[in-house]
Length: 405
Image (cartoon, rainbow, N blue to C red; front, side, top):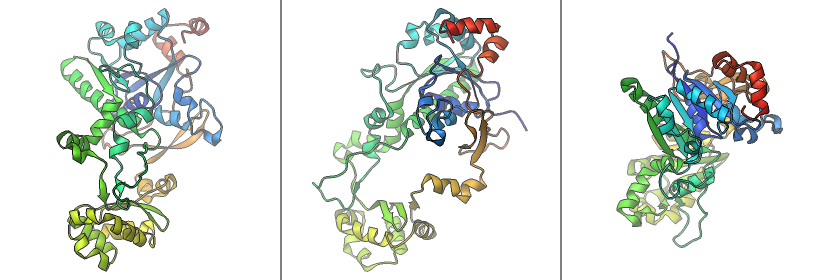
């Protein structure tokens, strides 16, 4: 078996919370050496976000932090101090990639901007992840996941108006995606761009600065709706009159997507060819849209009499695009995930043995693996500072007292 896919690639991560750490995690789990830099004393903000093991808040037991930081080495460092800056540049000098998520201009103020760092490492790839990017009137704005998710239009375009709602009737407002889904999307987008730059670096030896906007990453997922609006503003409103969508059933919910004629015919067949679904009111997509307020309750009435499994498996047999809405427990118990060994067990010195999601792909020659649990705060200070950079333990004591590490 060959080495991991990214064996030999050295990454410095100077990030908090989700997007940057997720970008670096994707590389770490593929074999890159990732050194995560955290604030002395407090560490990554994700350490203070739940869920926590046994519902007891603890900086080493945050499920969010534990998941996002597998396979990484962890050190504490304040690059805002003269000694901290010297150490930071020393680490970057030998790195292939630097991932950072500070507010635009922050790294430049520290003397650690891309133009500064490429002088000591011309082939450096510097990936900067911010809410709105390095340019534009919003470049300096701070934002939470709630802000970027709604600013991008994701919450607006991702949800159709229920077909049972009539024109002019009050509707529920747009809803943010669960958890930090938008931040994960931005982290994945950043990882793809960084891998492209790494490929170019391998061919030419040239580095580059990658400007990742979380908002842009989310807007790119709305490309059909955004493109439609750009060419026809009247068509850009939330879709009204689409049958199906999120529908309650006997033991939960299913999602139905059947706008095309062959999809509608499969749905009708699934429901046993009821008479109301075979007339003029359902003859084509336009007729169904116009009569959606009358048709949607009839679909929901049929769904409520059947379970998710019945609907899903029968729907599959008719090539009907319909699927169950699964809970976390449903996913964990799924024989599909169990067969593919999607969940892996990792032993953490504080949190103990826990099961973690792995990845959606399987490489035959350089497989994914979580080589170590998420680091304790400053866990690898001695390894990095003493064994690699030549500092003594006494130096570490002095630097800690001075707020450097």
